[in-house]
Image (cartoon, rainbow, N blue to C red; front, top):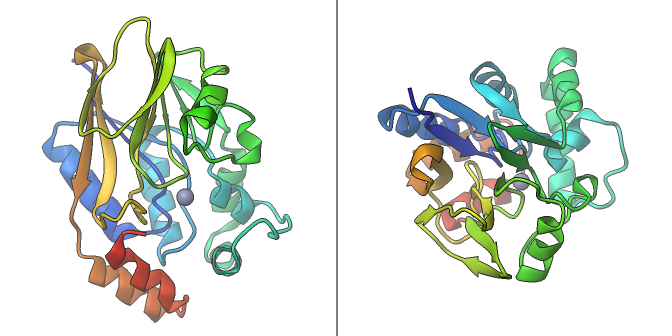
Length: 242
Ligand code: ZN
């Protein structure tokens, strides 16, 4: 049976979006699930999302929110809004769940491709790959031809074929001798102006990478945010996709 992957990240405790992604992946006969990190933070269901991912994904890497929730480190690099949710999230998870996040690796090789949350260029610094210069630094550390990442919440592909280029895409074909660094977009808090959940279908045999955008009932996610008393701004921003 040929492998068909769903690759996704930046779920950020949004269970409604995560369930919609899994339903779509099942409709597309996905048989392998991979997560590029940031399971928790921002939305109201971190524990449920963590359990879903830990029981279904073959590989998961640690995102910055996962890291700071699991480690009692200073949050001064965080926006105050994000920091307040990290505090709240710590109280929602069991010791065992916190340990799970803590033990996640920063990057992994999966069947010939790599996954990382931020960038392979010092992943523990959580740098954002926004432009071709950032991507160039990543490519210097990328040994596989294909690597998936998240962190910016904006789906995009960087390609190095001689020089580095940045491309928006809905489908992308990987090529021999050419490296690509593919951002999966965000399941639970997209920031490219499109509020639909974002994830990647990857079919290595066909060399095909497909970006999927999935509508879900975000009023339920907003209700959940308000019901637990998290800041209302977190509920509002979901409608705008930023
Ligand atoms: Zn994130």
